[in-house]
Length: 345
Image (cartoon, rainbow, N blue to C red; front, side, top):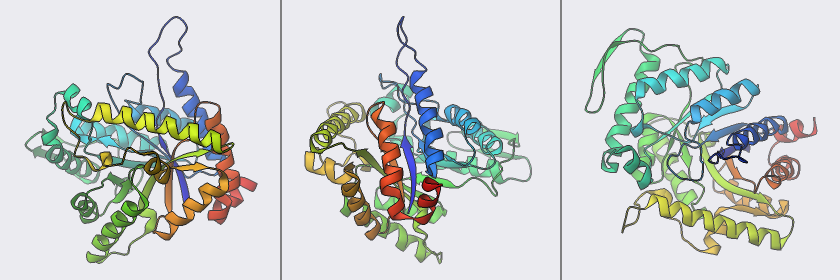
């Protein structure tokens, strides 16, 4: 089983006694330690206009992290393509891939938060079409051997060649965030890797992997479970009471997410927002508890076909580092020789 990280840094608004960069510095240190402990990757989210400081410029932060690490895979989960000039994204991503020695995992998605589309004045109804056109332009930017032009519905480019070239050929691995059956099949049709969200139940995870596997095999390819990354919130608790407090914090965060994602007077139709707002559902989808409790849930995920888990959270500053270390030393060795050797070594 392979383990990576998934999540975000935070940068609070500045003031006389506030260091807005402190959250970014802590995030970098956290990932440097994760690499030393044997974690395989880190995937950064992209979000805007939250008011609580989530990462907005994930490619910039990954560039800094690339300079501080040697083996950690550097992922985006996800870059929301409907908001970006695809050629500029292709150039920036290629630069990270080149400077990092080919460590970029390029995760992309359509977006789902109402407040972000509203803030950018991009109609959310255009998300699918904008995403597909942008992704096509990015892939062509990385693979075209000669100059090309593009005349699309949303973007036009004339006689361009994108530089620098990517280190990975033909381009960095592309991961797509998806949850609905049609979207999952689209990922398989494009031949890319699949990212699944952290809120889905065991049953839903199993259904989505089955859809992806069937679609991959229907195209004559061999299904590789490492091409599916499943995000899960995690927290290595001190005791039962500590676990309960952590679960309450998680439910508060989920409600805050709903508040900024849903349109006025309505509810987001995105698959990521279909989770149940109950304590039981929150606990089922999260890896919270003692190392033995977490290992039991990982065993259930593995039985469903999950082999690549992306861990989100770990707790508040201070305890997050403790969760990271305890998970590496007390959980990871039971799920793969590679993790055991790196932790012991």
